[in-house]
Image (cartoon, rainbow, N blue to C red; front, top):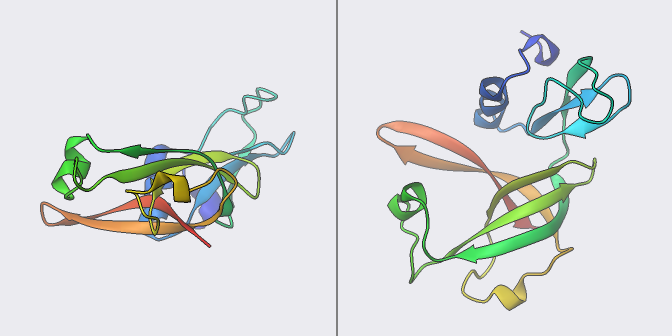
Amino acid sequence: MSENEKDLTIESYLEFLRNKKLMGTKCKDCGAMYVPVRKLCIKCNSTNMEWIEMSGKGEIAAFTTITVGTPFFVEKGYGRNKPYCFSVITLQEGPMVSGQLVGVDESKPDTINVGMPVKATFLETELKGETRVDLGFEPI
C-alpha cells in the first residue's frame, strides 16, 4: 500500500513513526501542512488532504525541562535527579510538532535556546515486550 493510500488516521501516523518516517498531511486546495495528521484543513475547511513526508529538520520554538514526569517517563528512569526536556519544534515545512528533546544537557537548560536547529530522531523504548517508537528531536 502506498503512502497516499493509507487512511488519514493517528494509527497510520504512528505506523509511519514506527517505520522511522515523519509524515504529515498537506491540503491539496490551499497547501497548509499539519503534523500530526489532520483529515480537515483548519485554514480552508477542505477535506482534500494527502500524506506528505517531512524533512524532520526545524528549530526549537519552545521547550521545558521536566523533573516530575508521566509514568511512562518515570519508567524510563527520568525524575527529580534525571530531568528530561520536551519541546515544540517548528519544522522547515511550517508545521509545529512536539517531541522529547535529546542530546542536550537537561540539567543545564540555559544551554538550550529557542531557535536552535534540530533534526528528528526516532526514540525506541522496550515496554512489556514490545518496541515503542516516539518522535524526538536532537540538535544538529
